[in-house]
Structure formats: structure tokens, C-alpha cells
Image 1 (cartoon, helix red, strand yellow):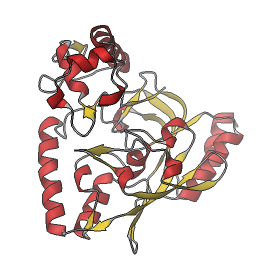
Image 2: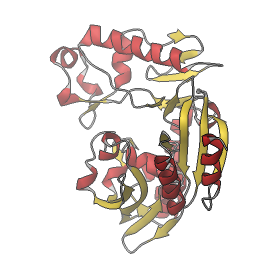
Image 3: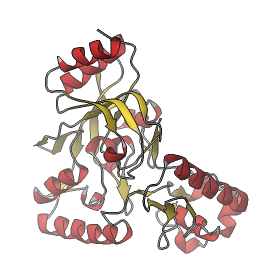
Length: 320
């Protein structure tokens, strides 16, 4: 028996685990970009996820964990190894908020909180992706982020499942400890939330979904904003001098403004195009490649750096 078939046999023995060989990553990312992964593994059970990782580690097999692929750029060559996805999606009501498994959709969590009269997630409505991905990247919109509600997170740290309080999560703007420690896996999160009027919360979310759908139509093959917005006080002096102060909101500055000034709108590489209506949005207009996308991102960063002395930072993540 070959080593590959022996590994597949061991993984097939893991309960509640779906295994696919030579699985398309383009089909599992919103950008629609990426070659195949040697193995794709999916499970709704934490114990099955960790057992599969242990099998892979003992076999010396390279592996990576992904969420819903909404903010992910997979390499054209694919991934030589195993790609895992945890799909646990239960949401439980607690005395002061919610406990949610990381594999569920963020929108489902927002909807649950709204209908149960829990305030704090309503402005995250319409953001695609999973609960775990939202914690990983401290997702947010309209001046609020999920970290405002996070009380504690359970994560696998490479050796064991660990409970982290909010301070240990080291949240910052679109940042967390999980981004710094790539081998950690968010498993579940407890949220503390204030009471609110369900009808008001649903109205807020519905309005924001409508606005987001205008900028990022659901059928558009994109990852939302490519670059993080910026913290005003961290801008280099030349960027501060150039920026109209009315664009500074709650201490943040839209990356799109700097991109507009350097002619980003309409720029393209192959089938990857910067949207005409939003300079911080790149979409796949057909059969785009990761190489073209990387080249386009690099060109945009170069132009902004030369003009403003400002280093833009990608919000998207790369899988290679």
C-alpha cells in the first residue's frame, strides 16, 4: 500500500470526517481562484478535527485550516497537503449573551442575536464568512467590530484546547492573536451582549445588508475590501497632509481614498479588475489567476507607497 493510500485509509477511519482528494480550492473560495488541494477534510466535530490533525502530523503531512474562503486567495498551483475545514455551527443562548461554534456562518449568528434581542452584532450584517473567521480577523463594519462583544474564545493552540479571555486575544483593528499564530484554530466563542429591541436590530441589519449588496453584490467574485482601512494617527506625515480631514471617522481613514488618488479604479491584470465604483475592491471578471491578483495588489501598493509614503496592508489571506 502506498503512503498516500495508507494516509487516506487512516483518515477515513476518523468519525464524522468527510474526505475529498484533489479538491478544487477555486470552488471553495469566493474569488473563484486556486488549484486543487491534495486532500480536503471537513467535519462538524472538534474531536474529529483534532484527531485528523494528529493523523496528518504523525504522517508528516502538511496541512492548513480554512473557513468559508470568503477572504482567501489560494495559489494557482493549489495546496500540496491537506486543507481542513471545521463546520460546527451550533449557537446557544447564555445568561448574558451567546456561545457559538466557529464553523457557522457569521450572518446566522447576527440573525440569531437580533431576533433574540441581543445588541452588538447588528452592524456586522452582510459580512460573508464564518464566526471563526470573524474572530480571527476581528471583522467589523460601520465603526464596530466583533471584539466589542467577545468575552472568551476556545482555541486549539497546537497542543491542547485553550480558553482565552478578550485581553489574551490581542484584538486590534482587523487583527488578533490568531493572525499572529497561524497554527492556532478558533473553535468557539462566548459573546457578552446588552439587551436590545429585536425589531430595531433587524431593521439596522437589513439596511446595512442592502448597502453592502450595492458595493459587493453577492454574485461578484471578490473578497470585499482588499486592503485594511487605516488608523489616522499612524499615518506618515505626507499622507496626513494630503488627506481631507472630513474623511477621518472614529480615528480611521478609508484606504480607498489613497487608491483613488493613484488611479486605481478600472486598473486590471488579466481578468482581475479594480471596481469602477470602489477603489478598494478587486473582483474576478472571469478566469482570473492568483498570480494576476498578486501582481495587481503589488502595483496598487507600489503606487500608494510612491505617492504618499504609505504601506497598505492586505486584509485578504493567502494559501500556498
